[in-house]
Length: 441
Image 1 (spheres, rainbow, N blue to C red):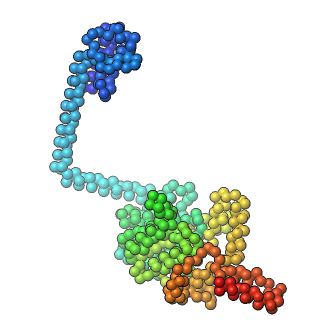
Image 2 (tube, rainbow, N blue to C red; image 1 turned 180 degrees about the vertical axis):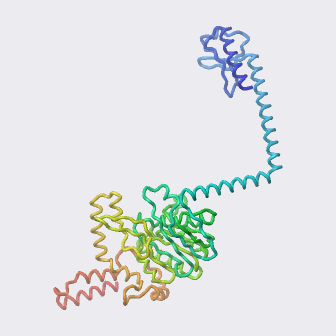
Image 3 (tube, rainbow, N blue to C red; image 1 turned 45 degrees about the vertical axis):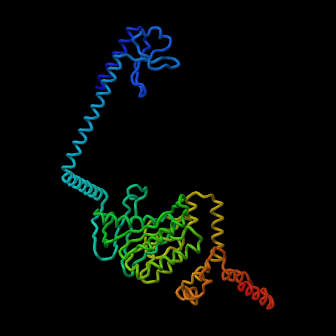
């Protein structure tokens, strides 16, 4: 009916133009007044009496005729009937679908299953995936694991890595290394391989033996929630808290740079405490990948259940080369300045940063083990031996390490600056008294 109406309107417009001698006459439509005949003001004297005026505009007037009104009524009636028929057909289809819903549902499940299985098989063949072994044993053993996305879109050839965790002597892996060395990628690919194995897919690895895992927890990346008034660090702590409250012996946890959103000593203290907390009996069996730039926490690798690994790099011609290989042992340094240089920071900034780093390492580099009390140097208290003293003194419990030098650091630095060959006994006694008063205050 719509096509017939359009054809009739074209013929009717031509007929009126010829009969009235008005070449500018147009038959148009809008949603307010429907179909109408538009005639410009200079041609109004040619309008016949049987035209019915509908609307007056500045430069033209709009009319209708009985014949046009009849056609419009016929068109509206046909639209209503078409809508009624369409609704009737739709409801009939719904009734038939409901009658056969069980069969349709089974067919949909079958098609979806075939579609997923076909996708799994296609991806596995194209990307050299292997069938993982799911077992009741609480372990994760991946050899030659790869990231399923980055190995396809990355510019460089992807470097495969191994992972082995269990519920006894390898529960927590502390992973150190510089930025851009592949730590976060290793964390993500490990979680993805476990998910793919549990969903019935082949996995991007040479072989994989995955213990049944009930949950995967992730604290990775940086984000804030400005609408809720939550800073990046607060979000990080909320997510960490959720992990520590809900992780089970069958859970897998990846944590990337816990504590980086606050001061150095605060962040280090939190990272250290989180790792110690995850060693408690309630988490026995929980497998954790813990990436960090706080190299001091690698001292925990001496404890049963923790292993140290690092993302290896090599230095060559005053440059660093990322090998992307995860190897046993702790990283020697973070190479942050070298990464900044690669990013294109001005030479003046890089040079100044190296000087400041040298001074910091010279003045404070040897005092960190003393502050932490990790027991790596003889004659110094370990964290364990210091815990009772902290718990017995409520004021000390509230103390907080800051980025400013501690009294111990000040003492070390002032002693370094003294040339004992150039001072008298009296001067030595005065210096000793001054240092003693500084510590007491």
